[in-house]
Image (cartoon, rainbow, N blue to C red; front, top):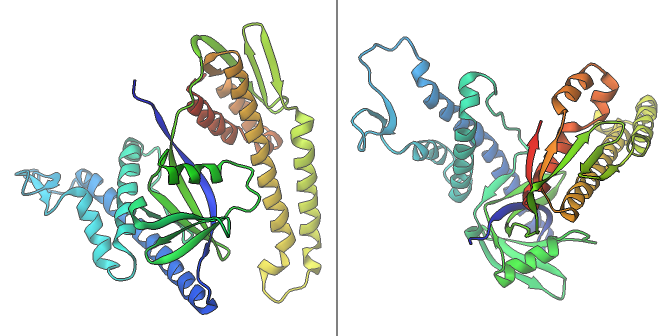
Length: 365
């Protein structure tokens, strides 16, 4: 039987592997130029895809006009002089030729085309708005653009060249599986997929996408786990006679409310902070506490979802049902405190990802 694979994304910090400061500065400037070009190209591509899809809504065309979004050479009613995916690629490649590697534009075009086709029904019905990309967008690249990927034992880092720019990884005190995944890539046990480079605050991050095998557990589809999400107990799960509560209201909220109170005090005292660089300098402490709250909540939700999936695997539950969630969401929307501090959506997405990885079917009631 063919082994199922999943896409696993890991955020890895990179450093430009050049000894000269001016050379590193020049390479960094080039990366920022590519990011800016990618930001403009992404918005252009999505706009063209939307216009192509909605051309049938142009009711003021005469009725005798026949059209099809296809190459005119392959279909008599085609209105394009090339394939649909190639049409958007040529638009951005002609505009940004020489400013950014064409491999980046090609990967970006494929990703946006796939995403657009997936969300097309929602665009058509008006249930979803068109994507709008910001300047900090990451730029994608295929694995074939990486050269000389190897592990440098002297420096304890993985090194490679991307579009002639040398990079090395900075893993620090890695408590996750990043290092082991990269070693598996070197051994050929797993492979990389189209990944991204993202720039933030002068740092370079590699959003590496790995193909991994789905975990194999002795699960029984007839064994059903019923889980309930709430603020009182983040997760309550029951499998037959076995029952467990994961986390408590006090545990989850105590630290979060403490961080919020500290952020409020920092905001009050920001009027007395030393200026000189405008708003960013004065609100430095406020932004620090905002980031602390985000990191704390993210870590707790990871722990809760991990404990839930481990409990299901322990009792061989092949099906996981989140019960009575719609009613709880409606009730939460009426209370600002609950809506502000519950984080239901993030917890659900983490449970969904971990359940898929473990081979557990997830149902939301």
